[in-house]
Length: 69
Image (cartoon, rainbow, N blue to C red):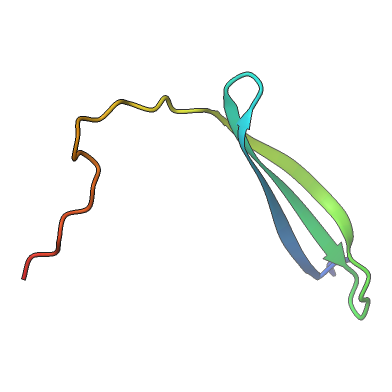
């Protein structure tokens, strides 16, 4: 069995905050036939998850400390 589109790449489109409280990454796979420079979309899917709520941190929390030697 030979692959009809042996060359390809994926693009990732990130949406940090969507309506409804989610974030998403849309992945699109593009493929081209052997010897062709024409790439076209072959597959697409969406990864989605709920947003994390930001916690209030006391002063100084979350700041980087100097490295110890």
